[in-house]
Image 1 (tube, rainbow, N blue to C red):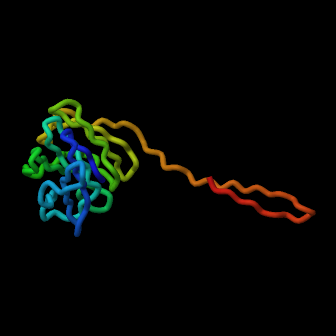
Image 2 (cartoon, one colour; image 1 turned 180 degrees about the vertical axis):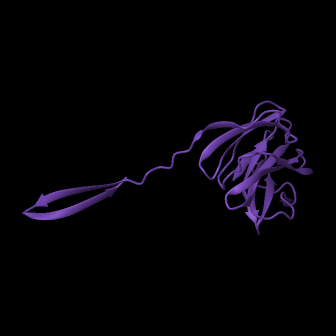
Image 3 (cartoon, rainbow, N blue to C red; image 1 turned 45 degrees about the vertical axis):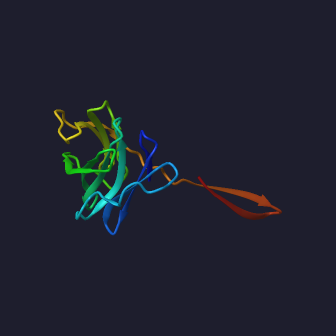
Length: 167
């Protein structure tokens, strides 16, 4: 997934050999830094997401865990691509392996929305160091789409022809 930064550069996050890596390119696609080894030696990592910051830096978030019970981690980078330390964003209701919804509330706070393996949706606001003074907020339940099959019959010359459609 590619994310555009405020200076028009791009960050592409991906999983490579079980680890989160990122590539920073300019708007023409020329690589601007060496491969960023975001999650270092950590394993069982999923769903990296890049959050651009107003100063040209960025934070990469990811899920890490097993059995659809993941914690949220991040690593902040300067506009030049210099890495900060890996941080844990503590949550009580662990996230399943699906995309995080991450937004910048202002230049200091980050709102994270995630889904648990029970399809419950939670939200929590943190500072950029992963510290929060609030509890997780239960937002709702994600409903899975139902796979409906409509069956219609049409009579043609006394023979029954079955027509089937899937919605």
